[in-house]
Amino acid sequence: MKRSLVLQRKIGPYLYLLPSVLIMALMLGYPIVYNFVISFFRWTLKQPDKFFNGFDNYIAVLTGEKFFIILKNTVVWTCAGVGLQMILGIALAVVVDDLRPGKKYMRTILLLPWLIPGVVTALMWKWMTMADVGIINFLLMRLGLTEKNILFMSDPSYAMPTLIFVNTWKAVPFWFLMITAALQSKPQDQIESAVLEGARYPRIFFFIILPYLSPVIASAGVLTTIWTLNYFDLIWSTTKGGPMDATSTLPIYTYRLAFEFNDFGRSAALAVVSLILVSLVCVPYIKRIFGDLREEGVL
Image 1 (spheres, rainbow, N blue to C red):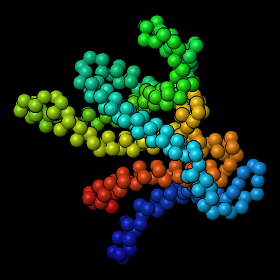
Image 2 (image 1 turned 60 degrees about the horizontal axis):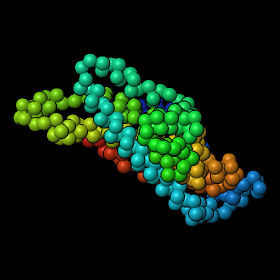
Image 3 (image 1 turned 90 degrees about the horizontal axis):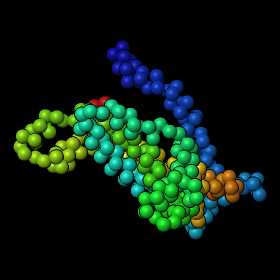
């Protein structure tokens, strides 16, 4: 009797989770498995009959002349974007947290970019950065900072930095929100002790506040890395990966392979490659989470 009760207590919670797990498996698992299977078949609109070709799609994708350009663009887009989001988000959260008057209003204002839909953000910045009628070029010329219009979205030298800036503008509020929430329970006693010891703010920040924020920074970093790596709306709505593939990332090129070049097999293979890259980011973090849960006795 005791054994059955113990077994019921151990299995019971998982039985409650079973319906959700099955739904998630159908909604997420089936498309992933189907995409993985398709990646081993030659399937184009010119040849609608699928036939097995092994790893040919992967070889074609990985050895293609555009792959390393696109991979480099993806790494630059992700690393630069997440790095800027983290630095600005932490800085804004720390500054606003120390404000006395106007703190509530500043929090509301800084969250507004995050609430704007992705496509609206893309079109808004595309219009503002137009070379002939964009307000940004108009202001730069009126201020004497440039003598001619800058092709923000059409020049390969400016396109990627411009999109990284726009993505940072939109995503910084998420970091700001996460860090602001964490700062509400910062170790005030340690900070006061450090102040009494004569420590200046930079030392307090780097040796007390920053280590305290490290779990939140890690969580936000993983989430924003995944979101940025897979971000599609902004790039497609502004440059479509151009000019000259200067802003083409893995999600953009995967979409183009499928719906412009009509090569569904290679598109599926590139999607699997993207999934592996995302997993490389997620796996260490998931291991750490499960390790912490085991230490706490939850698992």
